[in-house]
Structures are given as C-alpha cells and as structure tokens.
Image (tube, rainbow, N blue to C red):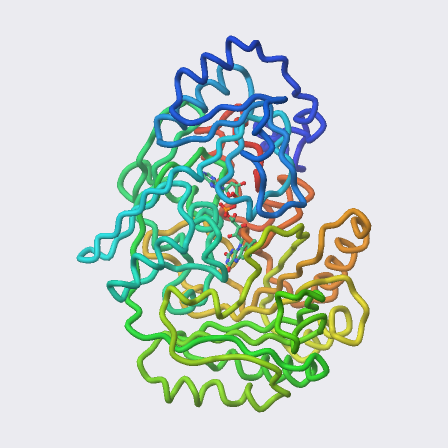
Length: 479
Ligand SMILES: Cc1cc2nc3c(=O)[nH]c(=O)nc-3n(C[C@H](O)[C@H](O)[C@H](O)COP(=O)(O)OP(=O)(O)OC[C@H]3O[C@@H](n4cnc5c(N)ncnc54)[C@H](O)[C@@H]3O)c2cc1C
C-alpha cells in the first residue's frame, strides 16, 4: 500500500507493483461458475479471444486482465463485480478504450460495449443510455427531434466514461459539462448492489460519481437532459502552419469576447504522411481552428468568425450550417485506433506571454514529436455550477490546453518529456484544477486528487471510503 501524501487516503490506494503481482491461479471451476452466472462471454487469462475482448482504441495500452466479462446487462455487471470481490480481485471497466490510463493487469475487466440500449424521450428531452453507448448513437437519435447531447469532439467516444469525467464539448459554454445534465446514474458498487442514484436518492454518491469517473462502481446506465439545438453553424478551418503566431495571438484576443453560443478551439497539428488525408494536409504542420455557433443567426456567426478567417492563409476547411449529428466535422478527430500519449491542464488566462510560451515549445518552428497542442475556450456555463451540484473540476478555467503525441516505443521517453515541457512552460497561468478527461498520464492517485478543488478532495475520498472501502475500483483515474 502507498500513501498519496495524506495518511487519511491510505485505505484505497494500491501500488502498481502490488496490482501487477496479482496473477491469480483461478480454478477453472470458478471461471465456469462465473460463466454460468452471466449471459455475456467470459474469457480467462490464456483464452483465445481475451486480447480482442479487451483491446483499447488507444492501442498504447494493452490490457492483461485475469478475467474479462463481456457484460450484456446490469445483471451481468452485478454478477461480475460480486464474483471479483469474492475472489479478492479488482475490477476495471472499458467501453471503447478511448481513455485507458494503464494496463488493468490482473483485474476482472468488465467490457460494456454490448450494452447498447438507447431511449430518447423527446417530450421530456431526456435520454437513457446503457453503459456501452457511444455518442454517435444519441446524437443521431436526438437530431430527429432538434435535440442534442453534450457530446465532445468525437462521437466515437463512450458516453459514460466521457460524462463521468466531466465531458467538455462544443456546446459546453452554452449548456455546461455533460455531467451537469445527468439526472440519474445506475451503478453497481463494490458490495454488488445495483443502485439508482439521483439528486434525491443517495445524493452524496450522485454528486461524487458525476466528475469522480470510475471510482465508485460500474455504471450500467445514465439518464441525462438533452438540449434543444434548432440550428447549428460550425466546422473547422486549417491554416498554414507558418501563420501560427498570428493565429494564436488573434485567438487569445478574439475568443474571450465571444457569446456563450460559441464553442471554439485552436490547435497546432503535425499531420502524418497518410494517403487518407487530403494532399494539402498530408505530412504538414497546420493550425486548425474549430468553431461551433448554436444559434439561429448565421449571419452573426459569420461576423463573429471573420476576424479569425483573415488572420492566416486558409489551406482547407468548411464552416457553415450543419446538423448536430455531423459535429465530428468540427474537430475531425481520428476514428481509427491509435497509440496516444496525452496530458492537459487548465489556464486561468491566456495572455500574450502564454501564447509565446506555447509557440516556443510546440510552435511549427520547433521540431517536437507532438501530434497536437490544443487550446480550447472555456467559460460561460462551463464556469458556472451545475443546477444539481457535481464533482466536476475545472470551472475556474478560462482555457484548457491539451497535448497529444504518438505513444510508440521508439519515442517512449521523448514524447512525455516534450508534452510535459509544453505544459510546464504555461505553469505561470495554470489554474489549480484540471479536467479529469484530459488528465492523461498520471503519476498516481495524488495527481488525480490534485485535479479537484480542495473542497472536493476530502468529500470524494469520504464517498470512496463508504462505497468502496477496500479499493475494488483502482484502475482508470483512481483516487
Ligand atoms: C479522440 C478523443 C476525443 C476526445 N474528446 C473529448 C472531448 O471533447 N471532451 C472531453 O471531455 N473528453 C474527450 N475525450 C476524453 C474521453 O472523454 C475520455 O477518455 C473518456 O474516459 C473516454 O471514455 P470511453 O468509455 O470512451 O473510454 P474507456 O477507455 O472505455 O473508458 C475510460 C474510463 O472511463 C471510465 N468508465 C468507462 N465506462 C465506465 C462505466 N460503465 N462505469 C464506470 N466507469 C466507466 C473508467 O474509468 C474507464 O477507465 C476524448 C478522447 C479521445 C480519445
């Protein structure tokens, strides 16, 4: 056992090497017993199919659990958690593998991708989704009614993992974090109970799980409010990389004055030499501006965007009317699995010196092995408390900064060092909190807890101690 620095936190913190040494010899009869209790497939270490069952979208992480359970329903999750606890094993959960933190070695890994139920109630503007649903399914179903969920940059991401980590998307400045819109969470806790928590039932757990990620149990279903988006004007523009200084300085002056209807970000991108990219982008360093205006006045949107359009040489792009189920075209995130190393921080402000620091460490003129260095505008509803308060950190931020590099063996040292150097150069303007979904690589529970405002930390640990006293859920961004 290790400490996070505060002796009070000892109960739930387990060292990696202790976890990694859990290579249990589970009797085949016990695995058969588990198989008899669940409808989905069960794979034990050594079984064909285990690696495919637990494969992550971020292929930098290859999970080697002791057992994987392909859950099909809440009852499967109850059985898997109870079986794991009875065998003194820890539980990990994966929907899409867009956000693994490290190998869930020796765990019982519950995969949720078969739990694909989506129900939209247009009259109440509520969506109910099972644990394995990706954003694309809800955005498509809701668009029919002029409604949308608070999806992030890629609709390929799982709703539950994204939402439990806060969830910051293009509509966030108008409607807040995705977690803020959640009205009910159904989860299986370490005692094997399926609980439904709301603002009225188990309010403290309801507060903690919305922002506290996977620390409290395996979520089987979420209910959340959809927002009306009758009209959307959005897209992305790629500019020549050489114009990065002019574009980033214009962005820092321009973005804070935008109305809450606008979500925007800007990224320096080093694109691969790939046949799948248009020739203008192939192998190029470019600046990508993303813009989404959730309002009816498209002429106003054009006027709001115009100062950026003239700040650099446009290489390619489209910004115009779009449907809410086409929002992936704003960020154009990759769809295919890739090995990524990532890390993010939140800034209180973005003065000229901060832009210069970002350009000096990640600008097109420096040779760095980064795929992306992104600055997203925060503020608006992202800075206001949720109607039903939750544990989402980062509300004091004016901008988020996120760096992504290739997690390949030959760059295993240099990418994290370079990414951290970029974020370190911005330390003077850093807010105290961070966004859980953009924490990326962490040194341990202490760094995760440090992402939250001080007032949240003890409260989160108290809930963790109550519902998971022995640390069954210690993977992902564990506290
Ligand atoms: C291409 C890309 C774009 C992204 N864009 C955004 C963005 O715009 N805004 C943003 O906020 N984030 C964004 N993210 C981060 C993303 O929200 C997180 O990585 C999120 O955790 C992914 O969830 P997942 O279920 O898809 O991934 P997984 O790797 O399957 O899950 C990640 C973690 O989520 C938790 N989790 C998942 N399912 C459950 C469950 N049923 N019960 C309990 N815990 C669970 C667990 O802690 C798990 O380790 C992006 C990530 C990628 C790769």
